Length: 412
Image 1: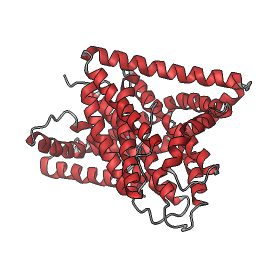
Image 2: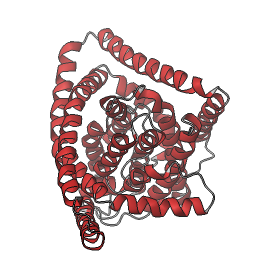
Image 3: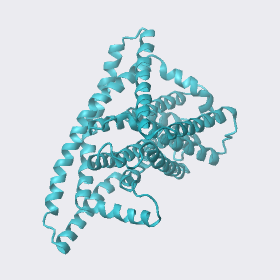
Image 4: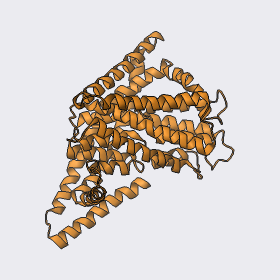
């Protein structure tokens, strides 16, 4: 419903702006520009979706091998000391725990399309423990907030989009996204723990939080002390090394279990193919609406207004052109993705704006979409403190995205 209003709003606002330009300024080319943008945007949406098919098939195939090799269960056992404290309402051994860990694993690998079905299953398992079927439980709220905060270590989809738009180093956003999503996740967990009176001073949670903070600070200090020309080189090296280790590790685990690795990969790859095909109409629709909105001049008016206010406050305005992605992110995943693609297409994939839009896209998930879909599937009406905590995490993730982008991709 939210995306419906956004989509219609973009088109109608663009139409009003175009009419004003035509009647008050005599701009006779404005409607030609708008119609031209619809064809160009539709073509771009299809081409990007087509290019995404291969990488989704690859990673869903790899993920299926990891699942059959038992790596997901191993991760669950490794994370149990922490998550048992964060979800005290889930009895030991309940199926909800396994599906939650599997969902988090998919999110960590950046497989958002694969994570959603698993997340819906996890929500149904949590609902089976709920005594008030229309009110969100504490476990549901923690689960939703961690999901909405992003928790992505390997932003595969974003790197694929960057490659599709000819970025010199598609993986150079790896570390900035990792730092930003850690900040958002940490804020989300702490906010929910504070409201639910979960003792964050427990040893396992303290080690967990301390590890996250130390990692973020360490990465920032390390790369901030390097010469600027070395930052992209080493961040790309670390990203590519991690990706290779993940792939090789999963394949080795599958062979040790004597799996038919090839058949497992094909099974997952088929899911990836159908997932990629399903997103084509959504991506085309939002890119066309954004193209109309931008070609009419409405986007320029909005951004110029924000830029004026930012400059008036004496702050650098380089980040302003990436604000559409940041603003859209909590409202619509497709909308934010479209804004990110539009930013890279307009300013360049290797521009500061293009990179910041990618970092902002990967820093958090879509709050209202996640809440509507996950709670809607089990009939939850009273979301309690879910949205306020998620919005706080989203805001902190956006601030972290801007700061890390200035550190990793200095404005020249």
